[in-house]
Image (cartoon, rainbow over the protein chains, first blue to last red):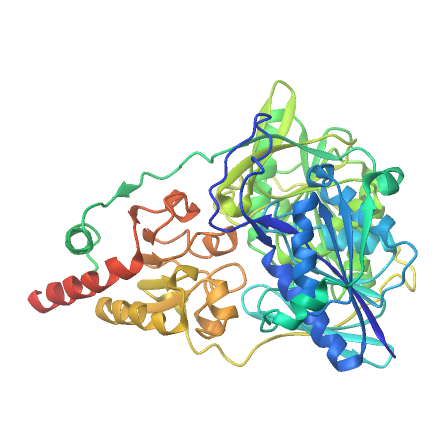
Length: 258
Length: 331
């Protein structure tokens, strides 16, 4: 049986990008560098590996302004078969409930065996969109997945629990899985992959096409701000040699660990 | 149950998860601020067994939400059982700890009720009759005040360590306990979970370490781990890492500190090239002293560091190793 897999991906600010607040005070200025949300990269990799094992199709989807198409281009270059881009600036401001609703509306004419998302995003960090999408589609789900094997009539997944515990779960397909970072080793796009990506199908979905499916946000960011420090931090400055001397003095005379 | 706060505590493997007390503390604080009443619920096959322990805390009532179908845990059964219970009781606010189990079912539960979850909160503010929740964004670089724009019940989860579990107040007398049996139809549960297990014994127990030198992405390449190892050796400490380092296979998984790894509280935690994503911070913020070296002055690790060194770890660590060796030789 062929496997049809959808991978939900997100573009987020680069990890070390300095962030500035915009005029609204409720979001960041858009002029930063972006990258793919890291757990989503692992979700894509897992989808590609499953397709290599079982044959089928990998489709990638994202929502966001024109810039976020880069995430889909990279996924196509790595081997995804086609892409769906819900393109509009307004998608950035949707809460997880509405983002999942928009995705559900965009794929309503398709049927996937598996839907993957990263376990959470590096920007909002809700850890919710995948589970919400499962509920909206009426599908079973499992979260924080470290291994996926096809079985007769379904899949067996390995869930990561806290404190070093794990659990295998047998479940039917279609299903939604949120993928943990480190489930596999990421591949790089090849030059030929990058070339081929240009000719792969990219379906654009305008906000108007899914507008009727989404409603008002159920939660609202009132204010975004630099967190107040709760700890007194002492900066140690100087040349590397001076810093080393000062630190060792602290370790010895204040912390008494030397 | 109008204007009621309901704390859903977590039990796993027949034990109350200690993080539940933190959520009780949070519930008590919100109740004190708002004047709303506070109740708690324990969910499971034999929830009543845990209810008494919760009823000792200062809460108005404890519900034992029970069904044989709630054992073992599945998101389908928990969402169905709690939906039934919450729809009947109509609390204004439902609070839970942000555990892996809660993350697994609470978005489904809220969605099934047409509601939303403000997840992974670190605090709340109640001002002029409005309740807002504080949560970290962008891996802790920024914080946000988030409010509900929908009708109650509102759902919120609190990050591990956001409140002090040992500050949960005990009641003057035990709260009444009521067992509520929920009906979960056949066919609702689709997943078949197997036994919970631990991977082959962890070779490294970082929880007992007094000194930890931890590396993050700033270490750049696998071969550079050696420099951190040499510093750890000089200090007589253990080497640890943030998740991306273990994901890359540069260090084994049992060296990982954070929500999916070990939780540590050494005398000294020296973070090299670790930006300080929330998932890492929750595993080490209990350290007595935190020294952070990072080239990005805005890295969130500096928010919790006692000593901050903004600079290139490859410049700083080699002389540091020499100074530590000198100090030890002289001691």
